[in-house]
Image 1 (cartoon, rainbow, N blue to C red):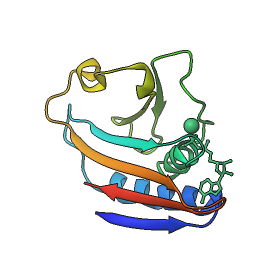
Image 2 (image 1 turned 60 degrees about the vertical axis):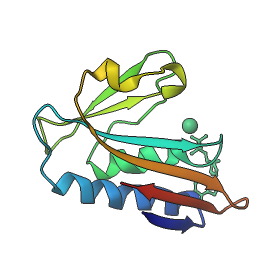
Image 3 (image 1 turned 180 degrees about the vertical axis):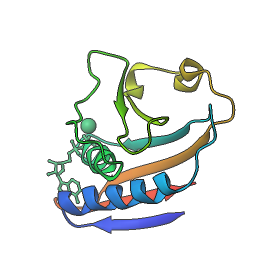
Image 4 (image 1 turned 90 degrees about the vertical axis):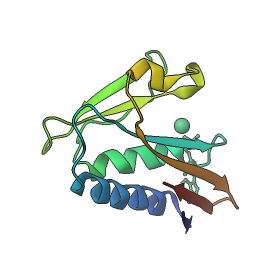
Length: 125
Ligand SMILES: Nc1ncnc2c1ncn2[C@@H]1O[C@H](COP(=O)(O)OP(=O)(O)O)[C@@H](O)[C@H]1O
Ligand SMILES: [Mg+2]
């Protein structure tokens, strides 16, 4: 478990970018997904985080929330066999079933609002 305290939106994006760069360096197994669950109340920084994360993967497209679709798929420029899928799990009970993946690796990230500008980010894997 790793805990961080960010003091601005920019810091949260930067943290996510660093994590993405760390993850993309490790080889992913074929047919296996790495699921990163983001949990936290509205305004806690989940969208900020995923935008920074996508940037860390080298994705240049602007990420938009998959509000009207179940998921959005993004190509990762330097890794043609890997995709980023952005799912909104409010709308789905069993995301893993949808993906049809066995024993996916899971990283869980919790976001807590500490003050107007401070967010506690807890990463479990
Ligand atoms: N340390 C911080 N990290 C991320 N967002 C922050 C931080 N401090 C303030 N904010 C503000 O909180 C809001 C986070 O919004 P957003 O990322 O859309 O959250 P969520 O997707 O969880 O609803 C933004 O308005 C942002 O400016
Ligand atoms: Mg959001």
